[in-house]
Image 1 (cartoon, rainbow, N blue to C red):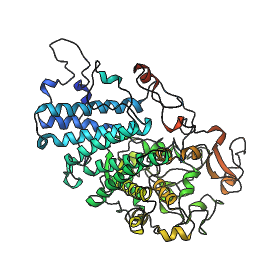
Image 2 (spheres, rainbow, N blue to C red):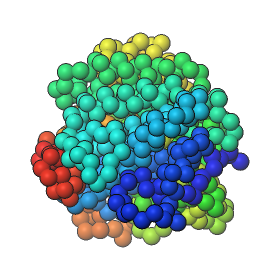
Image 3 (cartoon, rainbow, N blue to C red):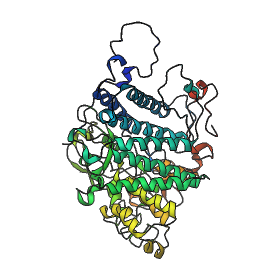
Image 4 (cartoon, rainbow, N blue to C red):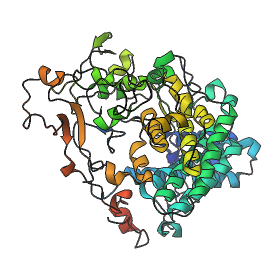
Length: 552
């Protein structure tokens, strides 16, 4: 059974951190904790820091539907470019709430008279989570106001203009540099502390932010790409050199699948996760995926290499699309651990294993003809809406991918030794052949394309794809393409669904592949869709100081 970090039900927002009340009554509210009796001892700061963990990414059956690799039961307006600027949005509001509370802890720490030996760790957590929540704002909106103090209703900083994206990236990195020496190593956590943030998580976030900004600068006419790519390399390499983490391999060739469900919780690959616990904080991810809430697309399926290390358009091992299973044969083992292979068994709500065939009608129906296996737990609780496995947002696999990509983007090349340290460590877990410079040259491949392929395959449905397409500058060509599924015409699928009339019940393209959304219904406008729109009410309340993103 996994160790758990205790969850406190006292929500720190109840401390009246925002200081918004101007009431002059002497009586303290009975449902709040007064500053006069709090922020006195180290345990108070720890209790306040516990609340920050609720800002971590929750499980979501819609997590990559805003891109080209996943499709749900209906169209996604962000993916197809039809969305409009919202009046309000939790994507904007929630990070600011945590930025406010982390800044408040740091202010009270300075005023407390307590030393870093007593409360330095909780200051480190505040710096980390302030950086993390600024990162969530930056990747969605670009530049935002840079505010490092807690506010009240009369604060002049409420009307600060936006800082540039680069200034926000620098501020995030500055906060992380403050956090790192204050946080413990992963190996220094006690059993009861598993789940708290560490130096490794802070370095991983620094590497993530630096890679994003470095590639954004490179592919969007910026001037400082090298600066951030250097930081990405240094930060990711520091995680590797710490020897604190390693890839999860306890389940052999099936380790990739089990990493993402209950068996992988608290493994040495996990740097930081959103925690879930039986009877206290659960989710229904497995059940929703069983019901087809999110399905892979042909774009995702085609990215998996054959077992000879070649893409499907180059490999003689590729078996085509004639049967429901043929395209899964001789492929990277992560494909069958991410997709439900037709006819394979999954754990059912009846408590046993049943063979499943993705379909277009009734049970196990999906819009694309593909089903997701990744994240589907194999416990009765999980298939009955009460999953308790964690969402591993920061993991060593991502760090290795950051290091490989940053090295290549910085130098225009990557050595075989560097590939062995990064991408080939991931490939060996999947029992795939090594990627080498000689192999790329001999087979007419492109090394950058292969690095990006590896990232998309390894991190599929973990929420990175749209951000990657945007920072690479490729969203403008990828996202307007049709969303397609399995090959239907002339295949086993058509034989099994003779009641489906092409052009009426199901749409296909000239090659016979299912089309779930035509290219004519999709768009990516520049500069509009490079960034999300700031909520309209926030622009209005700013009294003209909060400039809207271009095109909105």
